[in-house]
Image 1 (cartoon, rainbow, N blue to C red):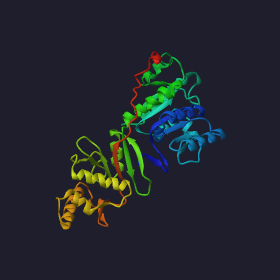
Image 2: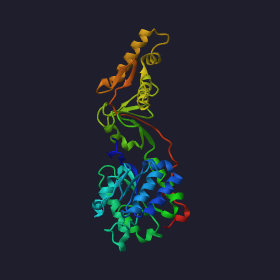
Image 3: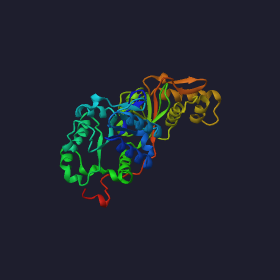
Image 4: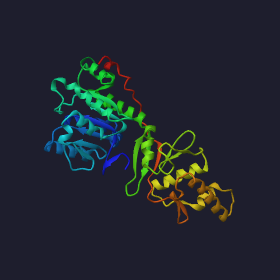
Length: 355
């Protein structure tokens, strides 16, 4: 399934990497308190040691935050990806593991000091930042955006040069003491700009699901779905595997009968409906006061136009005097979502200047 590598677990656009369980718990609590709707797009990676305390804490998070995905040295849930010993042996193995949690083009938020990683020297704790650089390098086309969190004061002076040499801006380090008031709203704003749209999906044998997406996700979406309708100023754009290549789309004239029918067909599939009655379609697109036979013919010609847009016209079927998208197809619709307030990380409050 879209962005899913194993049953129940998916690559998400927001991944937070922390060391100790209590640091991770503070972070998740800050998200839940200020931007709880983010949790459905978040995976937290807590790299504390395995044991009863970790198992109990992870179980508590899973119960308390039903939308959250977790990666930790624990097991026993479809929303949990276990961190194994081999994943923590080297910087390269850990970077590869974390990269597998992130959607291409997503956002990685990492603690500057990951003290639980044995391969990071204690006297050079800031070298954790190079893990984020390695993760970015594993994405050839759409590397994640990286933000760091720290409880260190004066980090611009202590490891600002290392950040710059690794390709990061010291101004993008968020203060842990201000996660709820500054850090989480800033990440939420960045995410809202990166993923301003909502993708609703219906696939055979699975419950309906929605993802936050942006224009950069189009190739992924259209290579996975058979039909997907995108909004645009010119009119709805029809894409997907039944339309053509990943970048092939049909622009439907805004306000046209065809656009309304495509929208209704997609909505019917997303709602698990019974289809669009032929008579209703014919009455909408046909002349006023037309006879039933003419209404039926007009509807058939109209649907022929829609079928001609596709590589397989059998994708639209007639069942019980109603038009519907054929069973077995993967269908989606992109719409404008509730965009969170935008917070620019460089619009820093005056008391943070110089850090």
